[in-house]
Image 1 (tube, each protein chain N blue to C red):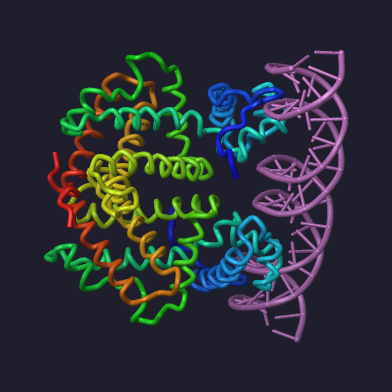
Image 2 (cartoon, each protein chain N blue to C red):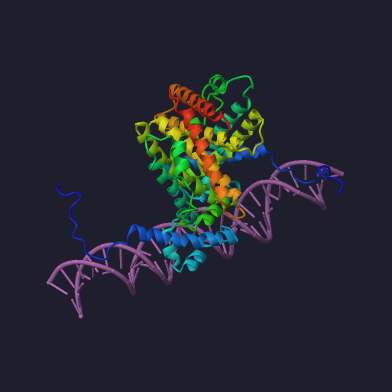
Length: 216
Length: 216
DNA sequence: CGATTAATGGCACTCTCTGCCACTAAATGA
DNA sequence: TCATTTAGTGGCAGAGAGTGCCATTAATCG
């Protein structure tokens, strides 16, 4: 009745931080993806991944309710990067200019040694149906984040069909561009490939929005 | 060396026709979807579906390599209908006019008593992650069909990025519109809902193409 | 009818994933 | 320091998903 958010006399062992948990997931994810690439997804068992990551099988299944979700932490990194850029989109700028100025899918910051792995995963989703499914579900979750940004931008409710459509179209374009750069980077990531990716993405996204902005 | 397509002295029992096989799949599909709706996907076992459909479990797994693919035959019906309309798109017409004139997501022809089921499935994909994944994979397959039509239309190779992007964007728009009509039809399908669907879809698709057609 | 090929069903088996419980780890308060 | 409390881990058993193999049945042709 009274308190809703109060009562904080915590007692026992505190839960691990969300960051720590994410880190653990990412760690397992790396092992899993390596094995997936080496042997294929079907041929890689949960037991094997768990062993490689140094946890019990039971714990592994707690971190990843399905085997294919192992790719999630790595892929999320990529998608989150884009969402962050999008959220930082200043109102006065054209989207295309903002993307050209800000978006770098990873390289220069060097904050990320997983780029190769991420692209490897994207490539794998074309061979491994189970991974493709997981990938698409993940992208759709990103679509919601996109919709969120767009709704604010257009000053419309999240449920507005216009918002959903723009988000879906942008997401689709992004998917194509990503697949494209992944394919172009089979023999290693090059700066040109990444810049081409940004340019292609920026222009396509802009064109989609231009078409869709003629609402009603 | 010599013959490649010749040698047809068939001997034993002929394989069942593709149509017959599809019909069988559709039949099982109907039972499965009913059970999914009644009990949830997780709570419905392969054995149960097989029993309901009157085949052995082994045969069931031969028809559907994964449990979730049971929704495929029904959903494919819907997607195929759209693709057929698209393929019949005459070169001289604007897409939006063609859609308005031709596309009816099912009702009048009455050739289809599965509409309710299809929409039910689409709604279910929002509650059941496994179904969502299957749904998205399916939609992506439809995207390829779309790309096919668009490539011919634009006289570009299937691999052209412009083609991929247009197909992806159209597909995305279509997805939103479909989700929308499914949601609007919870309490039964109405003609208004379906016409609204067509209208929304037609105008959104047109807008996307308009934006994207400014190539390069 | 016998030969041939396709489809089905039954069985055993592996792998995925879950529930349950015991055990260890980290915090608090006495 | 020790008891208490809460969180995370591991082990074990078991249901269900899905596969390989083989025997059986169905359909076609000579």
